[in-house]
Image (cartoon, one colour):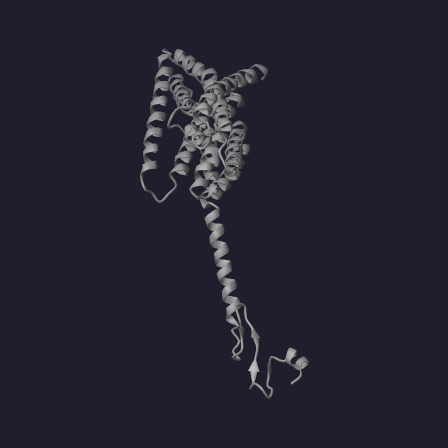
Length: 332
């Protein structure tokens, strides 16, 4: 049989060999005359399943659900006039999402950037709580007959914030099926949203500066959380849920009608001030042995000298955060 015929014929015979068939398969060339038509199909199905599983594992369903809910609530905010809380909610989302993306892309953690992120955010939060929440709490308490009502709220807020943070930290030492970092940050975001929504519902005349300063810590928080998740091989997209968390509770709470009772509002504003002061103090850059910043520094040369240098950065960044809020308030 000539070679031209052999090239186009699936089977041939000649004087040297009996009837022979050559069939191409995805994995091998077969010469037994049997065509494995299911091989390619099975491989395609297996590849499709593998791709779907990888996509499902890399994208957090809870994170996507959080975004969808936030979009839906945004429509309610526009309809019922809660534009300030709407802006604060989306700024919080953008800050944490951007921080998480940067944390995932980074191959190493820059200690100077981490210190400045924490310092700026904590300085801004302390100043905002002291300038906008504490005076309101004391003033409402005075109108109700005693400014101590505002002080009671402050004490309760600090105590509750500390207790929640301490109990949540215990979960990091327990084997669980869920990611403790994401759950802890989500709980914090939801509770912060509740307070922000309640404050703006009680005092609609408050400006955006308070809320924006309060959520300024979402950027560095998202960055730090993403670094921890990346190092443990977990999906960073789970942070989309806490990123949306502020809006998920702030918008509905802002639409609630709050009774015009000075004694209640004094405690509410005091409680909000206490909570945010606790969060701000917790975010102050801690350049001490065993701190998160110390863990990052230990991976570099001259760790002790660098840690001392970062203390100066910590003070400077916190001061800049304070000045930034005061300057913004003066200009606005």
